[in-house]
Image (cartoon, rainbow, N blue to C red; front, side, top):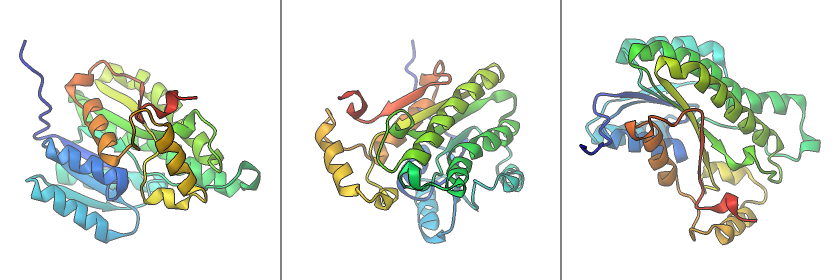
Amino acid sequence: MPATTLDFTGRKALVTGGSRGIGRAITIRLAEAGCDVAINYLRNREPAAETAAAVEALGRRALLFKGNVAKVDNHGALFEQLAGESGRLDILISNAASGVIRPAMDLTHRHWTWTMDINAGALLSLAQHAVGLMGEAGGSIVAVSSIGAVRAIPNYAAVGASKAALESLVRHLAVELAPRGVRVNALSAGVVDTEALKHFPNREQLLEESARRTPAGRLTEPKDVADAVLFLTSPLASMMVGQTLTVDGGYSITA
């Protein structure tokens, strides 16, 4: 049998929160495989422009879309513009995330809804719009989750609950969309030392403890997550439907 190669030449991808950290690594990895990539970012254009330049240096096309994906009323305009620029979409990576890092007893209703809206609520609307651009050829949707969906982490109550909701939604979307040729999966990353981790009051302790407990001997890096995303969106994962793939060097299986 001929070998299956990860050649994404001609495919079109959208990565939300694609300008920094894990999102940037995913964007670059998809471009390395041949994808043209639309990069969504929230505020800071400079890192977005730098990521776009890195994509173009690989010979691929990059598009920049500024906007808060938690505001689902804006999704229609985003995908209308994307349709005009690219004509179709093959891959959606729902990576943009935020949330309030506080003990559960200190959370307000506003904290809760903000965190749920961006981490879980946005995926439903993004998927609904994306499927319209995927057409009969189908495509792949990957939502980036975290270990907090299944484990209690200090100050992570709202974000962890939102990631659990995200993974549940992935399973339901997967069942509905698989007959249409659209595969939906989630990827749960271990502790990754990105800018987002700076918001944790116990950051240093978290990093040290995670490194100590990871059987692989090091923390998960953005490139590790990006490689797993490439797999999930490739033909090699054609029977991965509604799954949450954990990439953490074995951290989550230790006591």
